[in-house]
Amino acid sequence: RARARPTALAAMASPAKRARTDADEAALQARVKELEAERDMWRAKAEGSGVAFPATHWPAAKPSLAGQPSYPQYDRSKPAESFLAVCDMLIDEVCAELGPGYEMPEAEVGWVRRMLNYNVRGGKMNRGLMVIESGVHILEAKKMSTSNDTIVRLAILGWCIEWLQGWLLVADDFMDDSKTRRGQKCWYLHDDVQKIAINDAFFTEMLVYKVLKRHFSHLPYYAQLVDLMMETTFQTECGQLLDTLCLNLNLKDFTEQRWTLIVKYKTAF
Image 1 (tube, rainbow, N blue to C red):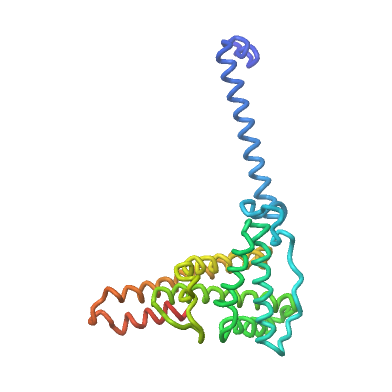
Image 2 (spheres, rainbow, N blue to C red; image 1 turned 90 degrees about the horizontal axis):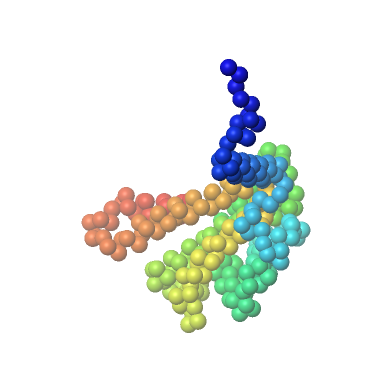
């Protein structure tokens, strides 16, 4: 027997069934459009076009959305001065974004500038300066570019490490009831700071990732830098846990192994 054609079957269907069929088809078409849009989004990301970070691609007033900045000339014959100049540039960038990008009042912006200048700027800067020197030697050995932009980015990465160290010290001083840091009174001991220092420590930690995003998100190794900072922070927090829980231990628990683990995880990475 000859089979009925689809059009004939559709004509024989009840109005209710035809309505359900039409609704199913409309839903299917809508889903197809959603999948095509998602496909196009991932294709655009893979090709380097479109908005890579839609959750933070607003408001338009954010200075960090204005494209890559032009870097100042880095004078390697004056390592400390040049390195500090990059820190000042980063502090200016952070403070410039707090108002238009995050609606922070002038008083809060001034607080952040004061807090950063007090806690992260200066010191011996050995960690940060080593990033530049070791980075330049590695690049030169590989016959790769050591342009001014490259050296400034190395300095920025060095300051990310310094700021990471800085916020950890602010928190550590509070937990340990320390009195001085780098030859000056601990931040939390200022009358107008006290417990605010805890939020300042967290705030500085987050600024590390803001700096990384602004200056490295367009580069292929951005994810590795973020991963490195997060892993190093976690390793340090493991060391801090070993250290602070000594409060609950007896003398017999203070073993050489525990001391080694504290030293390793708080300072070695």
